[in-house]
Amino acid sequence: MDLGTANTLVHTKEKGVILDEPSVVAVNVKEGIVEAVGTEAKKMYGRTPSQVNAIRPMKDGVIADFEVTSQMIAYFTSKALKNTWFIKPRMVIGIPTCITQVEKKAVIDAALSARAGEVYLVQEPMSAAIGVGIPVHKPEGNMVIDIGGGTTDVAVISLSAIAYGESIRVAGDELDEAIVRYMRIRHQLNIGVFEGERTKIAVGSAYPLVDNLKTEVKGLSVKSGVPESIIVNDEEIREAIKEPIAAIVSVVLRALEKTPPELSADIHSNGIYLTGGGALIRGLDKLIEEKTCLKVYIPNSPLTSIVRGAGAILDDFQEMKKVCIN
Image (cartoon, rainbow, N blue to C red; front, side, top):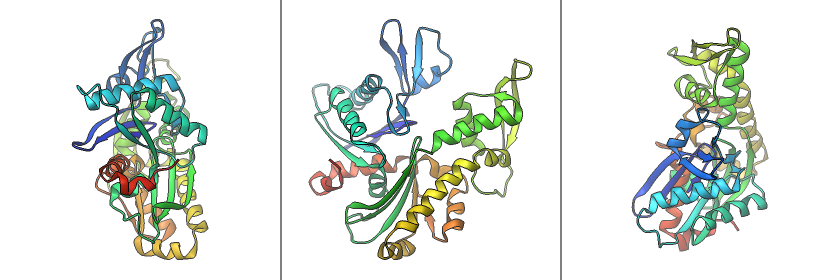
């Protein structure tokens, strides 16, 4: 399971990736019951009556609401296993490199309370590297940048371990919030965070594009107090997200600076692998290439790299167990 801030993905040994849904839960506050989870709950976000609260229980890659996260994991697990309610599965969960021991324990406890039999944690860059097909067991350095919803993890991997890692809590969510702030300040238009996310997907870029992209953004006019829509282009959104993009590039440069010389030589030969939802930001690979003078590779399906890596660990668990953390 890739228990992400924005989306949760589930991979099973026989079927591969079988679930990819938003990490959103709608809870009936009066009755204390879960109304909806995942895609259905995301549709309710910001549109619920007073007795229903649609929340995102994960914040910056860690659990912000333990009870709701447990219920979300239980829902996704039962949906994945369907009729096999009596099975207590072995579960491998991807986590950011920057989380504390307390936060790790919260993930394990949440999974155990959601009917898991055994729970193992793997750091997201390690899992992404395995999912991409990097031979992590070899004595050579490979750099992976994983940009998720809540965190950006940069790791240099060698001999089935992270030789050096950097992590910041600036990623997809921060880009969405930057667009929301930009629209309010520049265009006096209040938009929701999911409209910011949609705009980022539609026209977001980190590097000047050949073709000019445009999209319609809908929200509430600050001036008139009535619903309004405007047309924005990729140049404006690039301006909106330049600060969080600069922070991500900065952490990559810092990681390269602190990497030992032997591993640096390997990275020069092997290049950098860019995974996670942030890898889909247009031109981000070109920007990193320009700043580092290294080749940047984006896998075919960067969004599923972590969960496919976690699945590969389960496929050969006795051999791959050593990449998991205590």
